[in-house]
Length: 419
Image (tube, rainbow, N blue to C red; front, top):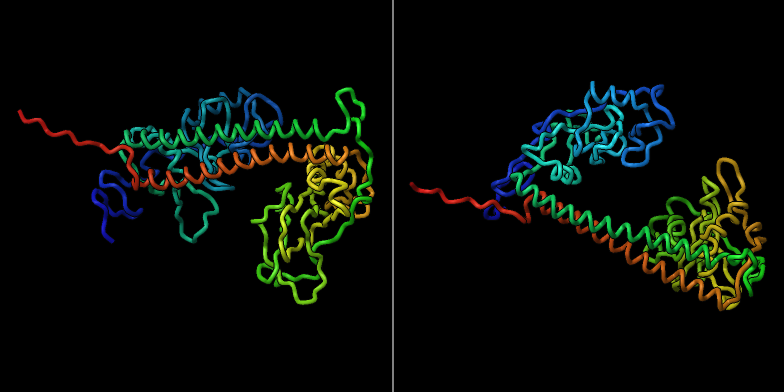
């Protein structure tokens, strides 16, 4: 393969001629905090103690200020800006240490004592996102110090590192800004659902036109696939709705189906436009009875075995999308939560479901409420897709910028001065 002008072939592939291949171990020693024993931790205290399970999340364990100050002064402790790395659990996750009081689990959370004379932490943070750790035997069960120190990566001069890190940092800021907008949209959605789906007004009185109904008067239930073996799934002439499609989406995602084999003349329940689906079994009562609705005509589509469906007698008498939002709201969740049966695994009886009673408005108001919530959901979906596209773009940018395939800064060699 012919090399591009200005590039060289290395063990990590083609990189610019003025770049080097570095080992992590060249940057500094691998460090870790002093071991903290369980007896030295408390559920509430002064200083957060991050274990591998809470690394990058909210702490659930703390140590005293005296112990923190003592260990920080006497033993290894990260500098502000150091990149902390998970050496166990999900290997290679990183957190930038911001200098605030905190302590980290020894050996499970490590960092390189980088002095930034060769590689800046800003650049190194992004390298950790694409670097590949190599070891004999394939899959890494633990990021040992020797593996981390021997890990190689391409590195330009510091000025180019700075330029690359700035571009990627701008992308991170855009992603973070968009994610914050999603949080605002979700808060608005929750507020709208709380207000519109509540049967009571601000004075605590039943809203005008709302009536109590029994859900079983408006439709009937049917079950998912039966009599199937493992060999029937993953191939076949039909599709079925997976469990997670129902759990994750108020409206069924028609791009998220799996294949199943259905024999000629086999007795199975086919889904229809407007059917509502519920998971009938869950490990926690809070997740039981999540609802989703099918709003497209899909031929030869079935329901997975762990769920059941509810088919309306007449969609004109009650809005299926309204019901979906209701059953996914705090009001509907509390109602279904009350029907959970079991100890270690919880089940939702179709009979008990059909006996549910609750208040709903007239069909016209149902339509208006469902449309209002759906509009917010559509906006939220668009923003969520935007974040996914930005994250995908960032991955492409990192692969190009951190390997030199695209240069945003190229050192210019000044001509020598003749005296």
